[in-house]
Image (cartoon, rainbow, N blue to C red):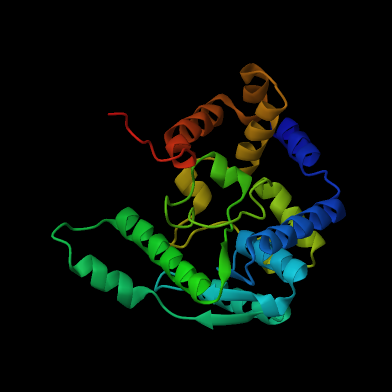
Length: 264
């Protein structure tokens, strides 16, 4: 099974990344021109997704037209913060840094309920989104989303949090492909190879939370789109992981649908 998975992941990662870069840069530039907006506003976490989205915007729009917002909390690893700052410096993008702890803590202190880590994590993601849009509104800008196709497809994002944005430059790329595009763009290995984590609470691991790996998610999605049967998919990712990924897709599907307007 491991050999089959490696083969499938290798096939789905085999893209012409120069062509991918060119196409995405053109789409980004065209979108900003069509909407009449001047500034791209992106949250920069120190992870691979935000790094690739930021780099594409910097190349498509010029660095002076990109603003990175670094919004750490007490749960943000020091290395992520250092990687985010170093990336922004490398790309010559302006940035602002501010902690969200005070805002999140003050909001949570007003509640009669006792919030758990998931509630506070989603609150943090939504506060970040509010900051991004405040800057976009004041600068005639657009909020650049940093979600990839793997996470979007399985609903691994906060509704009206990191799911709130105006465009998704890497939304058509699987996580494996995003990492490869990051390498093509010359981003540091410390970022492109970094294990994924939203860092919304201490020691959060995306794959631990998902109970599967991104390689298996990517293989599942890619094989499904190719029209392969579930039996064929199970042979590659395993029965348990296939069931888990299917569960994630079904559970998170509401996040991809318009808000229902009920008939009267």
